[in-house]
Length: 235
Image (cartoon, rainbow, N blue to C red; front, side, top):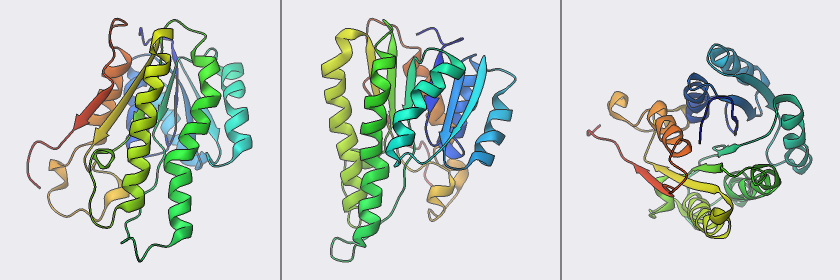
């Protein structure tokens, strides 16, 4: 996909990987729709993107809100133009043993990490499939490929993203839709402040953003459906 001037929608864009992805795609000349709950933080990211981007719009709302999910894409198209890419990034993290789980938290994590992605993407697909080249990029986790004690619901949501994304590619690749799922290990963001060690040796948010840029710009003859990112050096 030629990136300059194309419209990309990024969820969870107010900080961390989402903000880094916005800055990197802006430098490539894309037009950006930034989604998240914190409007002030989204505006700050938008200001960082103004110089390189073809355009930037802020769309604040809760992705678990069905009305917001339904209405946001017509609003984006009206403000920024035809939509070419969706970057699913918003998420939450909670660890608990299976017999000690707070089920309210687990239900919320299932909604945020998986259900909202499915619903939002289904609203995006009619817009994406209008083009011969379009993309859905899912910022998942290595937890979508493995399990560990205390991670039952978190890994379940990430495994669900993995399976759903693979099937979406099988269903829609012939119509020009690239579906790439990116699986990073711990990334140096606010979400994983509990990780100890030299954080400079962790995966950086811009490392993941580079993978998003790579997937979007990949030739139309093929699709990197899975990208695993692991840290190079010990913490």
